[in-house]
Image (cartoon, rainbow, N blue to C red; front, side, top):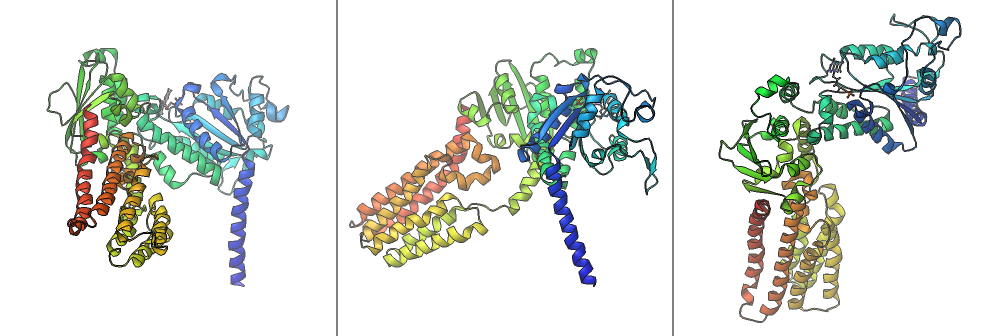
Length: 572
Ligand SMILES: Cc1cc2nc3c(=O)[nH]c(=O)nc-3n(C[C@H](O)[C@H](O)[C@H](O)COP(=O)(O)O)c2cc1C
């Protein structure tokens, strides 16, 4: 009996959940976005809401979305005459846009409310809209189990609606800021709503800080995707959305500086420098977590403006100096426009460097972490997630690609057939089973095909040991050389971890690896040639040593070149 009840409970619950999800998918066809910012299309909240809906639309491309800008609507305040309850039930006496808006509101399956926080609550336009929904309710008062009173809905569609609240505020935290609004929303929408509160909302519109706000908007889009899929936003995404974009101190400093009165501005000796406020923003977007262990003086000289600035990075702090007071560890010489475009993400940094649009001298290492250093708090969150993922993430290992070939070359002189079979078997095992533990590349996957070719040469007696050795080195070289014609050359797959997930989209990294892959391919072509020609000479006994020496020297060269070449390009 107990089992029967439990089975019913679990089974019933599962069915209810599935039904709820399916029902919701079917329900959300009509979305009404109601924006209540006086800035309307130029508002922070419309930017956030559009990102959310972009995510939603990615999942449900057939959903119909209509945007209402309350600023453009004529909505009078409620008169409190109760005519909509007494005289003409459900109809308001006021003649303005509200009658058509109420129809749209009723028809919507999901209402996305988008408005700034004003005086710890909703702006008056949004409040006026809510007050004018009185005709949608019945006059009777119902008391709920918790003792709270409500007016029942006149139309049951009102209760079936879902709500998402997207709001931005100007303070550095949502804490001690949004509590009153949340209480208000709880009473209005019960548990039928999701919310996104964005602190430091004013950063969203600063183009130079798009590296800071971009990832936030991406997270809002992700929230839209999740909402479309599951009818809610995951805890992980909520955690990201609740993390302010900038460190509180930096944000407050920046915000307060931007409000300085004219007199105060005049007192600031640097206020007439063109790049000064941009550099202050760059300093403000410093991410202390990424600065751990870095001790550097990064100098940026704007050649066209004849202005130089230094960012002193030490003990997780960053200080901005106007001028060239300290000896720089890294110097960037650029024109102002180029640097602004790079920091806004409108220009690819490594690409611009290769086109000699700016030069870097001194320690090049800091350039590799510049995005993390000046990416604000969000970069820190990304870094932490990336670090957590890194430990769990499967990696590509070059040894998996090399191993079957090493086996082949070691065993070949002893037994050609066993060598070819062992190499082929090894490569098949790696290609078939390696995926569970490692991130296999195309090269581990094509090894079996090429080694099957080597085995055929042995089986059909098409080559003696001398030819087989030379041919195998040549085939191996061909894999390297062929990879230079595709987007990501062979060495890049295995060395990408040094730079993290951005490496494969870094044009300088790819170019460096393309050169290295050509050189490695060349070494193996040469190995093939000298293996063949030394075979019947007195030098033959040294060929094994020479064949090992080549890759060892090339390995040392690779370690040096992968640092030297990017730095040389950077110097211009
Ligand atoms: C009249 C007024 C009142 C405001 N009240 C608050 C507030 O109580 N708390 C807060 O953090 N920000 C407050 N702000 C800042 C706005 O919420 C913030 O600038 C928001 O990002 C603007 O969004 P919007 O561009 O969508 O209008 C207020 C702004 C104005 C103009």
